[in-house]
Image (cartoon, rainbow, N blue to C red):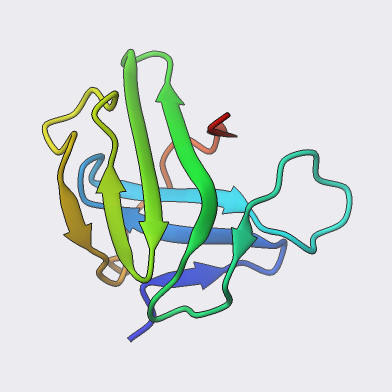
Length: 107
């Protein structure tokens, strides 16, 4: 079962159980993008580096996570209830909307 998908325009997409919607980041190898994440090309046990920070400005929320071998680890600076916890990735529900795509790399 794939827990991450790659769109035709080079966006890695996955379901975030903390935010209850999908997140997406541009991956390495896609021309014309300023920020790209490295992806191990394993859709069943993905690893993305570096970590991902999603800021939802209107809601004043932060989701900061790492994805390693199909496991999401939510960093403690996340503002949701899963901060500091880990979660085995699951397939994105069919009708799930993609959430904020204003992602940034951690430093």
